[in-house]
Image (cartoon, rainbow, N blue to C red; front, side, top):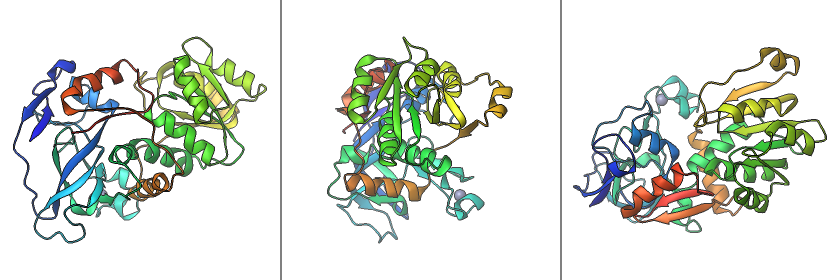
Length: 342
Ligand SMILES: [Zn+2]
């Protein structure tokens, strides 16, 4: 089969389209014919060697997959060849303290497709059969590969971690990212009022189409100042944050009293100064949020299938254009998800 792999860390040119053996499903496993695989920002970090994740080279990236079951290993009866599926991208152990509580993202023995095992930048990938989420016929494979890191992450952050209520003001940063496009939609679905921020006016125009009622171009405007203008000086109740650095600092300054910044990423800067006096006097909360539970992910798949949420797809490229897919993300040109369709 064809697979995109890298044998050394480096820039986009280390990605190579190669012929490799089709993997054989072991006991309890399914072989999935990959029809769509998301390209996520952390893939770029794994490729260039800065991810702090344990990889074995050569490595095949790609943890957000949708496809069809092609072959079953011994002892699998819950799925059948031909079923349309999306494997959970975090494979939890189902035994530890955190799994018992349903907090699968904290599993002490968690494994990720495309990290500890070969991922979906390939025509076939292996996954445990129990971890396959059925994809309703109303979902395309491209949509099926665009739910977990976007709607799953945002649902966990805004619903579970923050408890976002109707009528609240929400600032969604990086509006053109997968998380940003999902954040605007989930906040609107919950009845919140949305301000979107991004570094380009073209992305902000698209954010308005998704339901943002005001926008901030943080390349040109002061984030907190503009948010205070829009909200009559009050500030926002919640910030859906995924950038870090100056954008996270500006997000804290944009909060109303009792406001919360919920953060899921930090590619724009990992260490941010916090004025603790402002933090306690205004009763602000700075909340971390990581991935999602398996139940939240299944719920998001159902909501997309029901047409309540709509994955935004920027591009779907063949495996031979994996380098171009990485280039698009590195240049931050995308509005929504970039996918490979092997
Ligand atoms: Zn566990």
